[in-house]
Image (cartoon, rainbow, N blue to C red; front, side):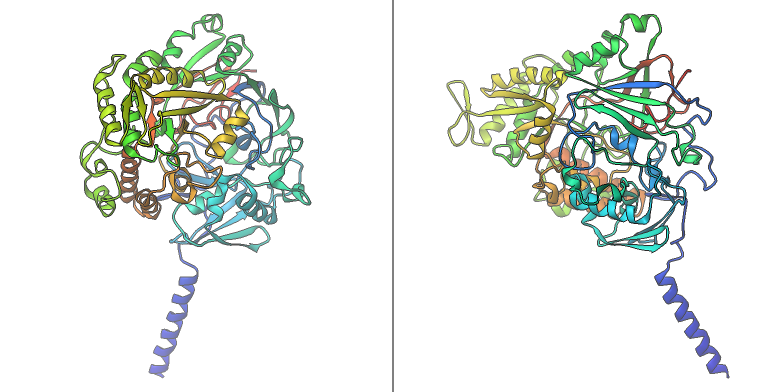
Length: 604
């Protein structure tokens, strides 16, 4: 009997281990998920910590955009929609907290479940979830949305779908997404994909959606009316399904949101001064100090508010298209970076009030450190030592001018770099190694007055090098089309980052995205080192490893001289109607598009 007893125990243990492997103990439904560790809020939280659950409902808030729009579908490649629609009219399975680096809580889904290796994620939908037309949000809608966005949608959705192995319904309200090449972030990305109504698009070409048809969503706001390139009116849905959710307490307080469109930033500012807009975000500290002294500010009808955050600087500036010579030569990019007289331009444009972006993740713990790479950062970079700029390992800082208009030392350095790259000066004209005059064009959108002013100052410096810089200022549709097709020499770029960068970095600078029309890799970089740092970042299982990988990525990007950085926006400046109020607690991402209007309210 004794041997049979042990044999039985052994068999039972083996069965238990097999079951455990198939269903890891950690794979249990949860109210939320974080990139690392656990979400800060418990399952029984009653409201987000940066909202006012008692905020009054009502009122109309009016915001303004420059340019125009020819689409109300923010999910396809075709057309130029108002960017706000994605956030106001549609929801995802999970909701991102603005007060944590990267934590999500159930929205359309009541629970999320992942194993330790995050090779799959399972969502269970809330039974009460409804689209704005009253129809239920179903598993079929979710599966269709994931596949359609990944195959016919905007390029920003394609990368995620390429890493999905299968999507299977596992119950009446549940589905499981299995990944081909898992990393810690993919389940969170899945939770943030917008969910659309499948039935609306039966028999229609989703990718060729017309202006007349707005996608049906489940969010608190619906498009009530619009006039192309003039305005969009959104109404709060009185029958919104999620009103009583803890995640929605104190949010979406306005009855109506209007988006008005103006020809350029100057016209928009005048409209704000005249009281046509409820608020305006200002990005120039000099203008903030100089131009906001008009009657509505003086008599208290409008007020100026400032907010700080803990985010990285991101990258804002002018990006080279390295698909085109001579911008594929780092010496040329470095020369043009030296010619950009930041200190003089910044003093002229902002009164020196705004600091320069010194790297892609500057201003945060994720940014590259001064001096040589050390520790885990050096270990990640050293295998790529022969294919990356030597300063990525030895240390690097952007060129600094003397503050004068002539910027002699940096102009001299730029001339040396051009000479090293085979350029010559003939009759005062910079000449390429092929013997042609060196000219290049800078693509901007009409109405981008600050960008155009910066470019004018830059062109003065270029002329002293014998270089002719031209400008193409085009309307919004042409601007988007040319960026989509990478039809530019240099153009404006702005990429904002969170404290938890992830798979979006592949779309921004990954090799696979470099030649994909519509991708956000405007620079066209194809770098095994950059790909390797992104891989390391996504594979990291500890915060220390993650930080090392991002710092290493920051070094390779910054020393690659792909972008000429300008000033950073270290303080968020919002002028607004004095009747608008915000909660006392400002979240970590206090300058995000979700902060205003999502958690603000108006005196009735």
